Length: 295
Image 1 (tube, helix red, strand yellow):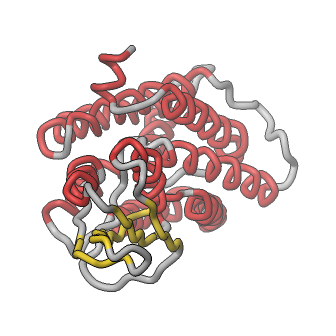
Image 2 (cartoon, one colour):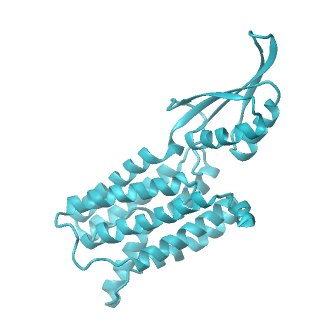
Image 3 (cartoon, one colour):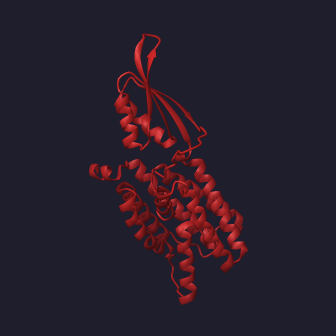
């Protein structure tokens, strides 16, 4: 497992979160969304539209929902792009998550009749459950592929773009097609589901929370800066100060990062310098060239 952990840069705890999250997501989609003929956003939504087209065109009768398999096939060329242009770690985690997602979406049965009579209630449950799932996946520093890969690739090319903007554009396409083919009601309720899903994910996703950290160290500012730059892919500003209590030289390191990255920094700080301590602030407002990263 040690070699796998080095490859994934993942712990069993994080991997378990990702697996549970993908299974919960499949339950939300198959049990609460699909029975009412509604559609997910993103690449999965496109896969569901292709599935519906194939079923209606070729009169296919099957007990499984093969939208997950279509989603996996669409992701294959995106996997290659992720491997070549993003990172191997991102590639490994994404393939792992999409495989789990595909199995869960294919195996978890879709009820013949909705479990909840009212569509809006089912949409609320599905959105909340799916949002919790998405929060688990992202808190494990994982990716569900699809829109995430496209978003990361395009943001590497253009700083004015973001994963959120790319996701919004794809969702507009999916729900526009839903409205044209299946009516306004399907489109509106699908949008409500996605809005609730996104709201819950944002509440749970620690990487969306910007934080600042001021680290005081007497001996190892360079080692702390190296960890932040190499492991967290952030930059550090540090300067010399003087401790008034004993007139000794002290170094102050200042960094802006996500809450998830701050948690990683705190876990490793004692290993770098046992005498160092950090003053932190969560939920800070940031303007300018600060990159919100997916993982």
